[in-house]
Amino acid sequence: MSSPAIRIRGLTKDFSFGIRGMKLRAVDDLNLQINQNEIFGLLGPNGSGKSTTIKIILGLLKASSGSCEIYGKPSQAVSARHSVGFLPEAPYFYRYLSGWELVRFYARVCGVSRSTIKEQVDSVIELVGLTEAAHRRVGTYSKGMLQRIGLAQALVHDPQLVILDEPTAGVDPLGSAAIAEIIRELKRRGKTVLLSSHLLAQIEGLCDRVAILHRGKLVREGRVDDLVEENETESLFVEGLSAEGRAAVEKTIAEQGGRLCRTEKPRLNLDALFLKEVNQHEAEREAESGAMSKGGSA
Amino acid sequence: MSGIINSVDRVRLIAGNTFLEAVRQKFFNSILLISIALVVSSIFFQQFDFGTGELKFITDFGFGALFFFGSVLSIAATTQLFFSELESRTALTILAKPIYKLEFLVGKFLAAHMLMLCFTLIITLVLSGILFWRENTLMLRLGEEFLDGRLIRYGDVFLFGLLQWMKFGVLAAITLFIASFSNTNLYTIMVSFFVLIICQLQYIALDAYSTIEMGAGRWLVQVLSLIFPNFQLFNVGDQLVFNAESALPLATVMQIVGYGFFYTVVFILLAQLSFRRREI
Image (cartoon, rainbow over all chains, first blue to last red; front, side, top):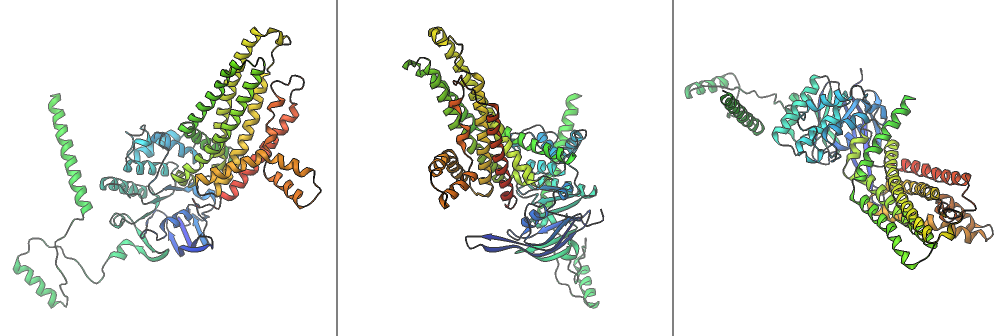
């Protein structure tokens, strides 16, 4: 497949409402290209047109003008969706089915052959870490588990393009980290991932490129590093510097024509701190229970 | 060819899943229990001592219960099964898969139709059981009235059930069409009941206007009678079960079934035309 995963050209979507048929423009002349094996973030505040764009990509909505292609096929064509997996925002599934039955149902809808279906279902359930809960009813799942079973149904037919609408919304940091790890694994497997979110901290460490939408218009687009880097300044992280040494560094900077703008202590972000503490605590608990079971058996 | 097989398989999957959801709903079970209770309650009218007329009374009572509760269930279940997918947004996940909207609609329709098949079968079985029991009792008591054998043709009870089931199919397809452009459950249910009354009573308008000369009024009624199916055609209860001289000809039964099938297909296709433009 030499075509880009998604190519959007001049996409505009107007919604009519009211008796007079007044128009609301949800997406305004959007141009985007998402390449293969890329993690692409669609960012923007609520009402910026992210979900509308995703629905047009999935063929659930028809564009007012412009075009959208998936691997070179018009997104309105049903055949284009063979290579797409989709996780909607806050997914809701048939509550009376078990997680395994649910994923199997979607696999059959996608035409996964009967000879490989069990293997495929088991494999994606393992990928999302729900093997132990696979035979529980979906109605008993937590929010994070619902997101993960939603990911499993999106991946069960082994699509090349995975579209995730707010995949970590309402999920705790541990769950979010697990989902982020699954997304990285998808990239390692050669998949293309398009995800929309307004949780920017999570996107920053995950995406290769991002596009920022506001009121349906594309505001910025590019590589994450290029967009967030301050080109005019540099950071030096120094350890064990005395007061005299610091004065000397400042003097040198001034002599070399630079200007010390600010000094600050490097900080962990709260997500990273939370994950570090919880993982450390979990490791200690496992070590303790391991030691106790060894002691017990001895 | 494999495309058609895959399409049938997807429709079957959606229908099966929706049917499972439907039979787990309290509404279906409640209607079923009320209908059975009503049919069974007809045996308590034996204290009026109708003689063999009691069998006719039980049959009419059972057919009436089948028609009334079947119509309620057909409209309510189709509406509920359609809107539950949209409101809970499971439709979003399904329609994002390589699946046609027509397959989704047909799956929904077949689930509602299978539900009505279960309902119709259970009611006709209960009705036949009661009729058989009462007929045996009356045969012992009033032997001289049964010299020519049994009065009831039990096959006709099921034939009536089949024709009613076809009618419920048309009603489900009409409900699906209304749901395809409507925004709420309530609107769909109200309009569907309104259409049911029109379809049920349109023969009165046809009779009234058949005597007038050709003109705009007659032309309008004829057009409307084509748009709205005539549900009276399915109400052949009086020609069935007790009419020993002339059973309903097979050709007539096939014509009624064909009539129902035609309108079912037309309304599903109309639903598809409307649903393809709908925002999910």
